[in-house]
Amino acid sequence: MGQEELEIEIDASGKVTVRTKGIKGEACLDYADLFVQLLGREESRQLTHEYYEEAEVKSRLQQKLKR
Image: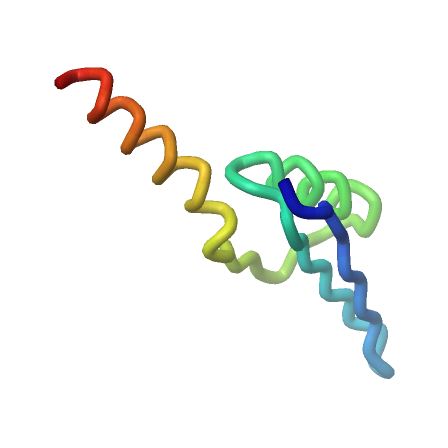
């Protein structure tokens, strides 16, 4: 398993961007939700390929188990 990281960027206008790296599946949403609570609002959210990786692995395992 790779290292889990949060990348936080604050631009000159004060806009905060938070990116999760190495956090697979829905766990990344827990971190994102925490920042929404801390900052008070969320303008947008984009899911990365890492969000879908855990679901893909589970789906493949389920297919193998059904055989």
